[in-house]
Image (spheres, rainbow, N blue to C red):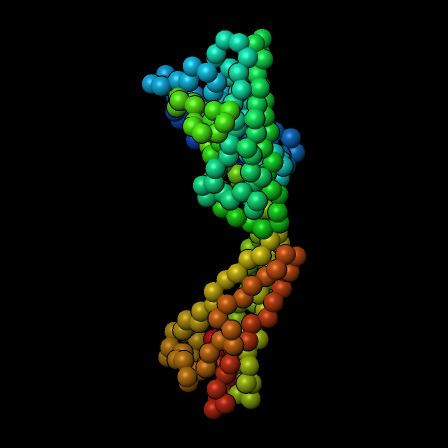
Length: 254
């Protein structure tokens, strides 16, 4: 097996898939890597109870980085002579048109042909998303039934390579003056700005801020102007307003 050290964006994504397979005896991972692109093909070495006698997938699970743009699947022909069949995709958590391009392709493998590679296009967008799966299955040429065998269906996992960044406060402590009606808090998005990200906002009392007395809503602050913030692609800074009561009599720290 190719050894991958945890490092850049792609390596971290593939690392968690490849390393997990090192702990099992039933599978071996084959890694194809090129800059921020790549896929992991997991070849099953255990004996399946029901193998196809006609055609099958070489692997039952493929993992592809979204930025690769496509996943390559290998088909193995077991029947004698020329055969025709269909390769059809099905949604799971990944949705056709949004995460990958649907395939319903008629394939012909000639008598002397034993192996064939096919590709399925992956949608590379700018939005960060969790890992998503879809299925690819082998059907009869008229698409009326799936070809029998456990190895006529494979799962493709799409790993997102967009970096949404990390949200944090620019200043952790704010001083509120008695005449202030609004306390402005700056939030920064650092280490990446791919896609749209949102965060819920909450105010909690600091027991030490007022000489041991907990800050209280309605007395020391009114409410957040908005309870949620959303950063669009490329946006790295936003301001949040906390509404203050007009009866404040001294400077206090929230």
